[in-house]
Image 1 (cartoon, one colour):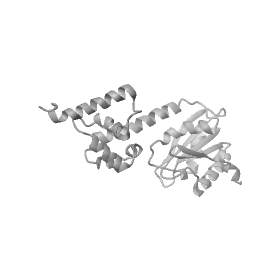
Image 2: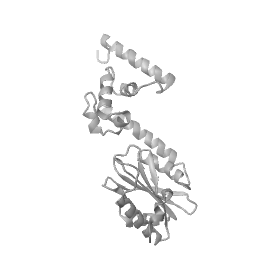
Image 3: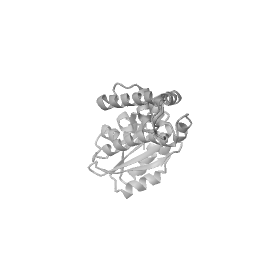
Image 4: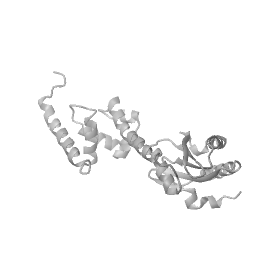
Length: 236
């Protein structure tokens, strides 16, 4: 009968039950990456030994982080992974990101670089594209808005300066913070980043809006123009 457990399924069922029980009692602390990935795959692939699939995923993508960063198409290229399983794998980091962004959004004011990092970093979690955000603040450093201003170009921070200024004016911002990521690099500003930062700072000053900071993100690391003293290098 369809769905009926056979004799050959019994060892797999026992393994599944043991892993689930370990997780319920102790969480993932004692799990290696293979076991953790197996546990996730249980919920998409019933009645099958998923251990070889977990091994293949980690061999192909190098780590759990690599698995979760893989595209839907890349995941489906692995034997045993179909659309539903790929969707489940990609869902995990995106739910985590959404949760972290929701926590960050509870911040009502940004008064320091640490505040800015805590507010902005979750938005770049598992991002494959280069993305530019602009945070608009009022005179009390309260957050008015956080807007995605560019995505998927060679250098997202090269978004139209006029568009950034118009958005800040529309939001009635007293000051702004911009942040963008280097998905495949390090959190160090490029010469182009320097040039655009200087242009934007100058353009905003003409309408009495302060560019408080420009933050470069790479993974869990970030560099602040303000804290690093790079703003002081600009000459008007």
